[in-house]
Image: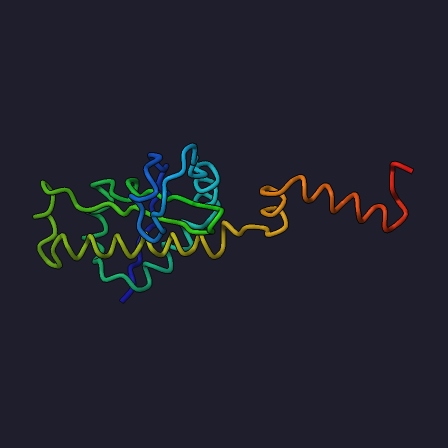
Length: 167
């Protein structure tokens, strides 16, 4: 079908929330001190992840222009929230739902259909962030977890190449 509208601004991300509150992420155990990487996700959304995912979603959504405009007026796009767990490379999302008081504004498809389309947008943004914007550098990730091991490996490589500073 396709929706030809202006792309709304990316959400500012309100939270953080418990990992278990996000879709598309293994809830597992909440970890104390998990900072949810809010600024990194916010920056990625502003740098194009929101736009790219929105365009992809708009090509296949069943929302009408009128329904989109109502969702925009209700500021539901601002209510999206995303969580990135760099250890597992998962990006979870929370999609807004049409408030009970405004459900009658969607007589054609019904508010449940609009909620489904918003969930599809959340999934598209989550996948875009996960696959294209929040790529983890394996070498950096390993060094973050085992800095002393990296230091030992560097020292061993220096000794093997004859550049041992202790000589």
